[in-house]
Image 1 (cartoon, rainbow, N blue to C red):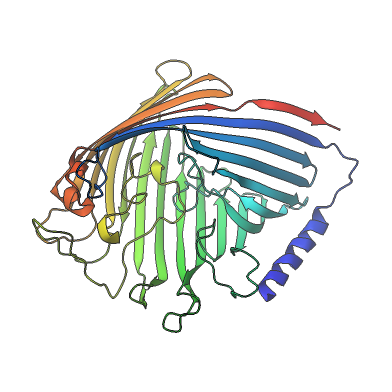
Image 2: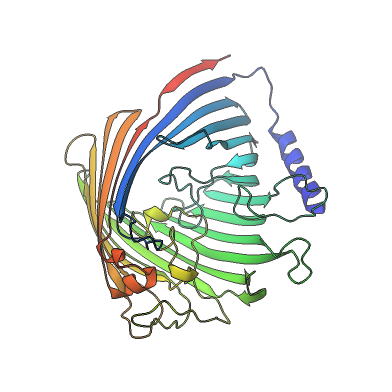
Length: 441
């Protein structure tokens, strides 16, 4: 309760600073965002044991958003009502509030924001909207900070519950958010008159463990930490990006009813060269640590080993399809038995604008695990990603992509299905974002 009172007092004080004369110009705008998305996949995921299962699938997905914005000097309000539905789905189970927040700002650069927010930081590796996924990510938070003179400092606080919990204490599981509590500090600095930006991030997550009314596995909140930084050096025609993060804290196994420490890390580097607006090149490497030695028996299932220390890095709430191949079934879809072998991703790509309004990209990924495997090579496979987008107008865009994965014996064993050796996936998205009306008074 003390934390809640402190948060409210802080928001109230900054809100007072942000108050302005209500006679100033007010602006209200309403728009829509409609996305029709289709996918076709074959291979890549383990079968569920039904020998008649088809090793392929197709579906069409629709996402509709109604976007309302209000703004006057010192105050902003933003709401996005979202509906997600597979074409042909019975009923309407996907209506929700994707975003809904108010933001108060002061002349000296201080601000306070409260509500459901689509958070995005740096290259979105740790915290991002993941908008390529049809539902996307948002967070119920209070965010306060300062922006000005090249400095940006944000403090983000969250405390989530499923209801008022009159009788169930603070137990939280299965809610719409990803964690029970979260405290994050982010700082970014852009060097004056020099093309360099740097960020630091610290995140503390409180995750629910245990079960209510179970004296052998009592409810508790266990904490994990993420900390690290991001650099972006962008002189003319060249961009160099780098990041490094570590994870600590405890991982709870409710089945075994025990706790084990987390010691995981990741590092990445990427260089992009774009001599002209017509074409460019990129090359990079990602390393995400994995759990220690796990034996994989030939001709048999994956054999798990209980680890005293968890070394498998988790990208948390980032936009994963941006980094590990657009198919990304290394983190969006888990390995068999929940094993986390880590990932090495070496990639090279070419992108360009061959004609007006058309953007194209082709990229190659070499993929490998980051841990030793018994009698298996570390190489997972090789993939080719093709992507293209065409903008018909400022509010109509069509994008499409295709990935071909050539997996190895290692991919087969870790995914527990030979379909991983010949995975292929195609998709398209038609996005229409009309502005319905804008008014001022």
